[in-house]
Picture 1 (tube, rainbow, N blue to C red):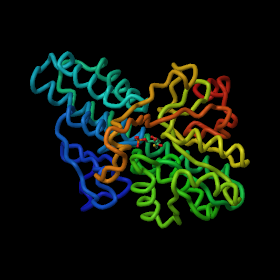
Picture 2: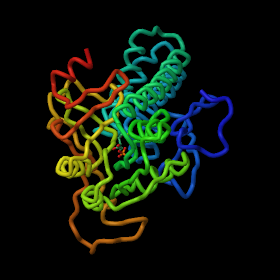
Picture 3: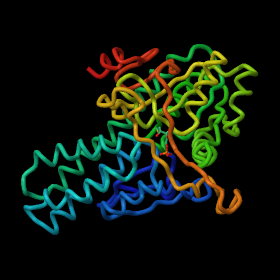
Length: 351
Ligand code: MRU
């Protein structure tokens, strides 16, 4: 909860609760415009998640938790003591807003567990306390992952990152970019090469903005430039986030991560995945069970409102892919680091 809203959102302000309303930084407008969208009901939050006003696995979990607060407030206003039945459609809509990032379902499930324990009285104060806890825990987890991930980097190196797994994609500080922040502060990173991340351009629009804001040297590159950069030497790590990690350590992340990991292995570059345990789905034995979101092909056929491909051209737009655990050198969570992940090590981490 913030008492004073910042005049303009910073990378740490993906989602803020202020005076009974949810403020989301509209990530579709960054970096040209940094402005909040103000939301008053759960339906608007679900639409904002679907439309990528807020994106990044942990950030959509945080936003959904605040969405449940709004849902509880409305359900109590309309149904009084019968609010628990009235809230169900909103919970479903929030949970289904996007399919791949498990943090969304995780956050709604955690809020639903609390709902089950409440009585017919006004649920808003208890729901808000839980949403604020989810938000604060995510920030704390990112700080911890930052320290643990930075420890894995020995010496000074340049790194490549893909998509945006930064403060703006989380409750604050960032997962992959949290590691980058901590490692840079420790003098271990010279420069970050940010893949532009076609087609939604999270790297060009968000990672470049965020790292420049933090004063960390960043160079943007086309996704296809990563292989030749690695071949030239000087890249020690690829550091990325994740939207869902299966029980065997397979990692779903932004489309292109898999290719990057294959290329990294060929060149002897290590791959680090930084993600809180809320991203780990122990119910899925392997990555083949992870639902991969397909978005509107128009995202691919046009760029910045300008049509690129010929009219009638077919296009496919899966927005995530799965990197097999065998290509991952380290999964960094707030509970600890799993090197060369496999099912037994993931089980040990998750207890
Ligand atoms: O489609 P997006 O922008 O929500 O995809 C985000 C990613 O793939 C991130 O790398 C992932 O959520 C990790 S964010 C800390």
